[in-house]
Length: 169
Image (cartoon, rainbow, N blue to C red; front, top):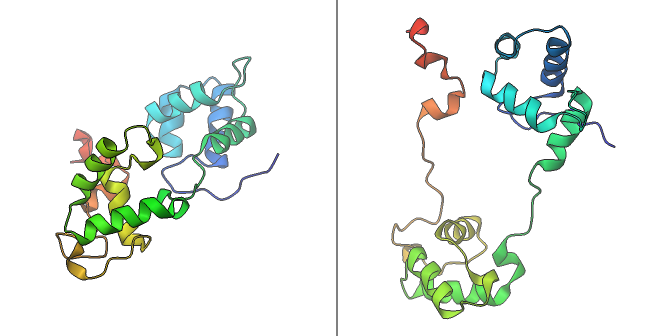
């Protein structure tokens, strides 16, 4: 078993957060006060306790941290890296000015039994932006861009919903 030190993002619970949860539970502290102390929502702490408790119902931080690490999604190869023929078919349709939405629908209808070719629109865009599908000119996509245009507002980057509480206005 490996010890995982580095947190992936501040959105996720760290080993120290899990130790705080275990100590708070052992002391009989309410979950809401534990959550406030570690800076997470109480729903997240309840979910953490439910998901990562041992089979006998106790919450142990090292067991919980390893369980969370095992459940985390692992990187897998992109569909267009694995299947050269799929990449060529999609590239050909993009050259004919087909939209990624239309290509995704067409692939499902044309090859209904070939499930590995059922790709969503976002997968096609991601492949173009990553350079997995080489576009011949900038106008291959209807937007004319071959790079990803970032979306979102600064509110999404905060991860702190304290600004929504009436006492903080």
